Structure formats: structure tokens, C-alpha cells
Image (tube, rainbow, N blue to C red; front, side, top):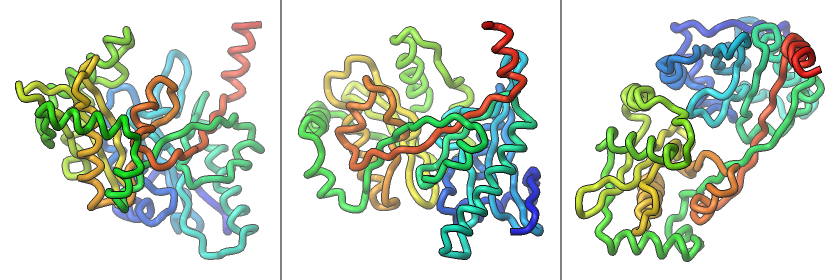
Length: 324
């Protein structure tokens, strides 16, 4: 590989970038220029796409999201974004030594750029990235996160293999007269979303206005599902987004103490709806013990992915002075 350079992708290059994302094994919806547009509607940060070029050929890249926190400039954890990953061009060779050497050089360039620009950086790597040694060699900290996925290729077998508790809740919801509607009641969903955190005495992490703007921006790349009682009350809701490869169960909220399994019927409806379009759906997260039971009853696979993070020497020096 010839000398690499890293620079911001220009607007005129967005179609080429999105094609690159689509064709890369690591490419997913959360690396596209469309998702960048979504993030740039959030008031607390700024998103841009950095491309890595070899002799003017795009060989890699990353969507970054930067913001200020106190005196620090950080690049980490954009809202509603499960993966912030480096994307590599599909290799032209099957030789492992060449693939590893190429990716090592790219990761080194990304490391140098992020280290020079930010006091703290964190990347949530797409699950297909298995070799994280270059990050470790460059001083990044490593942790492992998990998500559940559901294979959608055979719905009848999925139903047979699903936990009996989930099937019981789905049938209970049907018998209670719960119906599922699509692309309606965004305001009622946002009320449910807010209630989900307020009942836990937690701060609502995502601004409701941003969620509305996101749905408006994504248009035919997302769908809102609502579970509605016979009394026309919205008691559960979920927002799903997708790319060409898979769907993502991005957000969900329900009334507390549901008695009729509406959230189960809602997810089952989503699974059925997505099954004709995608091979799998990512349930976006399996890391919090008291929240995984519901997802686990549907899931067909537990998938791990790596999170890498790095503090600048300046930040470490400040912490050392503060806590010495």
C-alpha cells in the first residue's frame, strides 16, 4: 500500500462514500451520510466523515461525532448509534499477512488523527472486526459489549424455538384486543419514551425534538410501530431503522406494569414485518442484566463486539494532578 492520507469527505463525495459503506463488510447504516445528517441535528455535537485514501483511492474511513465536555474535546458515543466503526475496503487478496498489514497501517493513521484532535476517543467496532491487536499495541483500552440478533430466514422455526413465556405473552396480547399500527402516534411514543426514564428516576438521554427530526430525516429508512389497546391507548412503541443488510430495533418504550403482553406482540409483529425484507434484525444491546430478559426470549444469537477507547496524554496528566 502506498502512503495513506486522511481527510474529510466532501459533500460531492457522499454518494461514493455511501456506496463504499454498502460494499464493505463492516459497513452499516450508522456510517452513512444519511446518519451523519441525523446526528448533525443533535445540538450537542458535530458529525463528519473522514476518508482514508491511497493514491486518491478510498480504502477506509470512519464517521466521527465530536463534542465538548467541560474543557475536553471528545469523540465518542453518538446518540442512538450502536456502532462507530472503521470501515475497510474489501480486500483484493486472500493473504492474511497483507490484510493484517494493511489494516494495521489504517488503524495507525486513525489513531494518530484521533489522538491529535481529541482528549478522549471511543469506537464501538462493528462485530465483524475480530482483530483488535493494532489498537492494543497503540495503547487503546479494550472492552467487550454484546447485542442480540434474530435470524429472520425461517419465521416458522423461529416461533417453534422461541421461549414459551414469550409465546404466552404474544397470545395474551392478541386475546386482549391489542393491535399494532405503523408510522403513527409519534407524540404518544415520545411520551412513553419519557415515562420509561422518569419512572426510573433517570434523566431522559435523548431529546424528544431530536427523535422527531430523526424520523423526519430518515423517512423511508425507518418505521414506527405502536401497540394500541381496544380503548385506543398507545401502551408500547418501537422504532426500527434499516440498511441493505439488516434491520435495527433502535428504540422501544412501554407503559409501566404492562398486563397484556403488548410489547411482546409488538416485537413479534416487527419480526414478521422485517422477515420478508432482511436476513436478520439487531436488537441493539444485551449489556444490562435487568433489561436483557425480554430480548433474550426472542433472540437466536448473542453477538459480541469490541469497544476501544483512548485518553490523550494531556487528559491523563490533568487527572493525575486532580487525584494525586
